[in-house]
Length: 228
Ligand code: C5P
Image 1 (cartoon, rainbow, N blue to C red):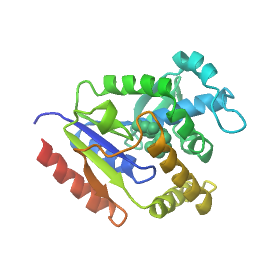
Image 2 (image 1 turned 180 degrees about the vertical axis):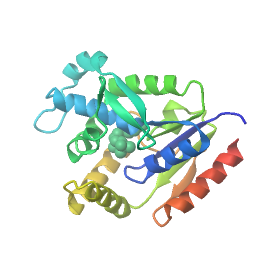
Image 3 (image 1 turned 135 degrees about the horizontal axis):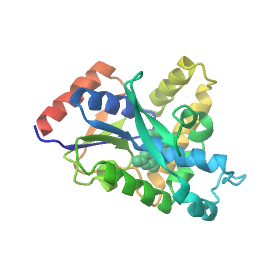
Image 4 (image 1 turned 90 degrees about the vertical axis):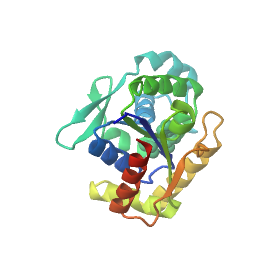
């Protein structure tokens, strides 16, 4: 069977990563979470005090330090999923908290950050057989991807899912703060100048507000089989 590139884009917290990971595992493809890469640069910037008090980024300083940012993934046999590493240290938990979530959008809007990460993503997908999720995979990273999915769900449904996820991990969570964060990120992601979030013309839309995980997985498998 021919190997293809599968691009999964969509809004934050709409379950893209879970479905992309599950699909990759089932079909034996490599999974790449590009959001984790933008989150890792954000963690690096937080660790190096590269945010101003108003939340803007000290971009000149970050640009000088970008060559020191080394992001990689290692498969975790216990969870069956890849963990994200920043300069050799596993940051899988650190990058998922609210601190990083509330600083990531301005980082993802910086052209030199996007250029560096997109180049790395294109190298990772060079041999195909990859499921990549993000915001600009079908439009910018792999405009020639054989299968493109654009995932949506209402902001309220997404905030509730994120709240449940954080609570299940025993983390602090406030639904209203999360909803605000989801809405702010939607706004910044769709309005930024470089690679704004938008559905590629040839992407298939999946609104999963009222779908179970099983229904989504079945929908995706069907699309995969049609594309290969
Ligand atoms: O997917 P996730 O919510 O973890 O992504 C975190 C942030 O990274 C998003 O809010 C978005 O600003 C940014 N992002 C991006 N392009 C991608 C993936 C993520 O701009 N391909």
